[in-house]
Length: 325
Image (cartoon, rainbow, N blue to C red; front, side):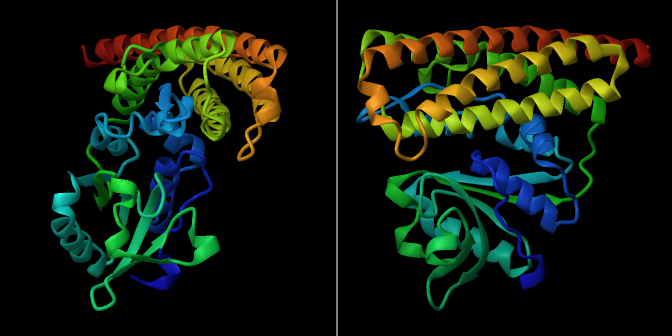
């Protein structure tokens, strides 16, 4: 793979979308961050996970990463193939990566050196290492050992672009993305039984109110990632509203609701900064009550955005049906 064209992880708290954006850029099929986030649904996902230290574990940001992922990624205009398995399939997975990187195809990989997504640019069979770009690359360099992957016993999960020009109607792709937005934001889908969307925000608020243990680092990480994701979601919906006059009104309502939600969450990002997490705020009953109130307001905006996104999807589906008729 030509060093000039080696894909780089794009800046994004949601590293799956950051990796996909980097691959699309290297393939000369670039999309702006908010478009990648919106089309793939990453702008609208979140589940409330529990870690060993409490509520709001960082895993909640990645809870939807295994749900219909190939279908969602194809909306970017590039189809991705996937290798999904356990540690027992690691050797086969390395061979899968080697075959693709040898012909210049990058591989998006889960848990290279963290529970995050990164990009495998090349495989060195002699040294038994990968050349990667992930969150650790700026600090420790690009070399990652085979023996350390997947990190912390995580699943083997790989994605590789198959080619440009997916045969998919643009309107159908947008309609599907809006249906996903409505389902994800409303909490309709519960990955591994975890509350998601507005339901997750309300249970998060309840945990603050009830004095439940909160994962300090995970809480701060989730707040920062969620605020950024909902801001990207708003930008995506605003852009659609400008392009789709027939459904502009519900799209604008959905975008405005997500903007208000992001504004609420930004208060908590300040109160619980990542990575320190605001230990003092977590132990203060007054600060916990404030956090709960903000999360409940954010949940209301999330539900409003879900309803508006569903209305927009229905409008587009109806318009598409009328046109076909």
